[in-house]
Length: 164
Ligand SMILES: [Zn+2]
Image (cartoon, rainbow, N blue to C red; front, side, top):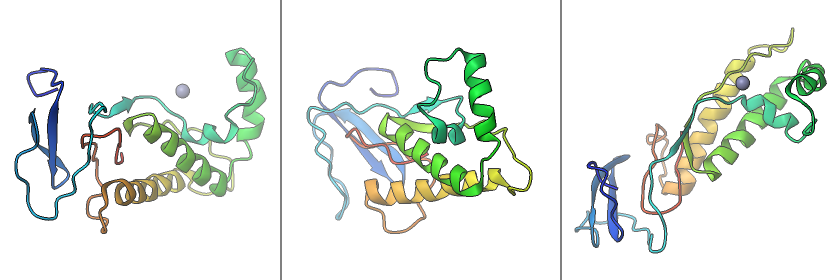
């Protein structure tokens, strides 16, 4: 789809410097030497999805109390969340962000509201997990060797989504 919302059945997307530089029909125009080409035939290139409501730490208890009502679920899980620590928040945030990326999500918000006494700054832990996940995802999927492209990037004619 281009900026006039016209769907392009057979086209190209050119990314340069972390931004979409061109979208159009047919094969991509000449690009600079060393540019990475991704064969997106048979694929759909679409903007990354945006998740407006998440609780990344809850990935640690995913699958628990699944048949419960909302209130039963909260009653079952608050005692568990009361024992959150930095290692759990870090692992849960990284796993949740990976799951989001695999589903096409390029941007997410998070509502972290459980801060057990004595566990330190769990919000900083979560932010650190997100920053590390973003850098490694960008390098792995876009082929970048530095961390300079670790800001929001979601592009290329493939089902790949780079980061948040
Ligand atoms: Zn919520």
